[in-house]
Image 1 (cartoon, rainbow, N blue to C red):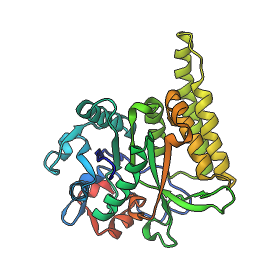
Image 2 (image 1 turned 90 degrees about the vertical axis):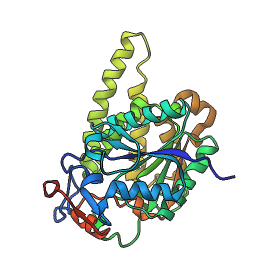
Image 3 (image 1 turned 60 degrees about the vertical axis):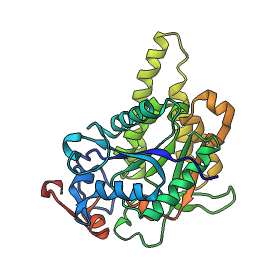
Length: 316
């Protein structure tokens, strides 16, 4: 039986300024702004093309844009969740909208607005992610095999993960489509981590670790201090740092495999009651060759590679 279709949120907020980039990417022309509105493909804004392809795929129960109504009102033919904050705020607003419409236990799919997979690629990856969700998983994330030639996206950071414990690491890129069941996740932690990792996603590895650890540590210490005031155990900081840094430590040494990644990610993201029931299978990683989901548009070169142009010169 085919997996149940889930509601889709397309994140279409603004990259207000290009973030830090890894060494060697200085020659690329990074762009910022409302990419879904200001990037044109096939004579239409990128968000409108993506909404159309997602609908044609038949993979989702409904499709909504998450971004400012004032920007997208006349550009897309779908519901708009009106929000214009950082990515954590936008995801929170979108998920709240889905849960209000579909119920507190509803699953949800989240996609970035600056990728442009084909209809067939959308249908295939959405089905692959929804299958483990139908089996009880709480969070399903795609890892895209890195091709030898990534074209204009050759600068993007890649991550080596072992398919099995004794295998050699394989290079992957993160895919920009996630399927999850929010009621089973530590959403407060996830919103904050999502914002931090998205903001720092292209920074050099070592510098990114330092910045993210400091920011996460400060956020969690504040949270645990409030727990202490209520006489609750301050376990959140220890849990997040222990499992998050363990993933990083294994990866940097070329020892991260799918089983370890799923175990530590489950401990990090899943509510304790859910982890006790599901164990490491609460988080599932799906391997795919759909490079379009990993090649999010950060540069003018990447936009030109998919046949796009910028409608607003101030975006560049």
